[in-house]
Length: 212
Image 1: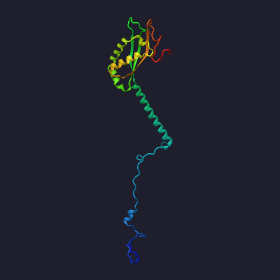
Image 2 (image 1 turned 90 degrees about the vertical axis):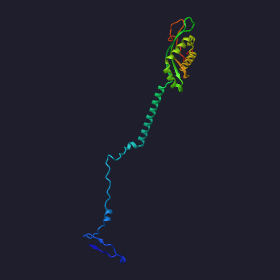
Image 3 (image 1 turned 30 degrees about the vertical axis):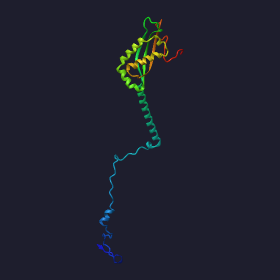
Image 4 (image 1 turned 30 degrees about the horizontal axis):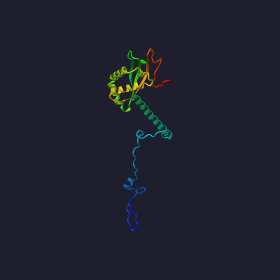
């Protein structure tokens, strides 16, 4: 049933439909606006981001994690530094060599044996190591020839200065590269004239001064 209500000052109002109970009916537009808006389904627990435990986000935990990371980083750097230092040591062992004085020559030293090492110049290490690998036998031969020309007095010098100089020059000449920075002689054994005793009875150490 439609009821027409009089408007103010003679203006006509639109008829309002009412239900049998007397309540006004809602227009389709109003009903659509009043209808609840559907919400999207709640995401499943597997797709939701899990929150970190509270103890991981505390200042103390973060400080501990930072210190542990720095410690591991430092240990890694130290390991590779030591490893590289050992692998690239400039000292190279050439072998054990023997000197024997000529017969009939008055020499204070009749025989000597020693281990020979060289220290390579750092900038020339790669090239020097390659040349040593290629010419190792030639280096050994040239050193033996030098020792056959040496004098027994060279081994009577506690510092072995002249002998080391000659060995350094010889190796550099054989390599064709002045890559040897110094010569190191170890485990020296000397037999003096008139006795067959070795250096165990009268040792010579190039790193000691006379009287030590």
